[in-house]
Image 1 (cartoon, rainbow, N blue to C red):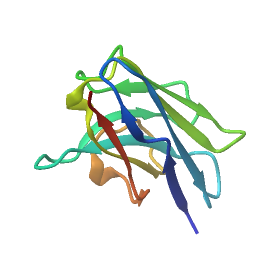
Image 2: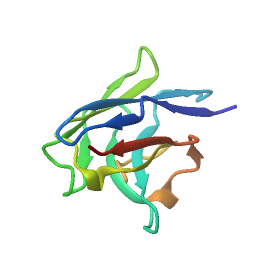
Image 3: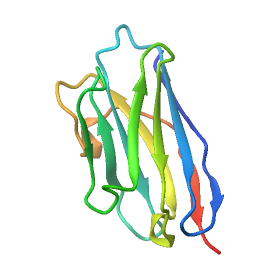
Length: 124
């Protein structure tokens, strides 16, 4: 049974940093893509970043490029999202998603397996 579990959210001041983790289990191989999405109140879920199965290909939304870094440790079945220079507009519930894809996707309906979400609040 596939499970995807996020952790690491919290309250941080503007300009601060957080690191989110996504632990995936139950996949029959490591050939799955991980995507990070976020959903703010009153807004649609948007793709933030994704990483290929090998970790060699990454992609970022324009709004977070240069501030967020995604990385993958296949030995630990874990993907990390390092978030620096956080802004109030980054406040949202962040979701990790996984699926067997041949490409790195920022489209939420490409993914079948989702975590429960972790709240990130950027506020002074």
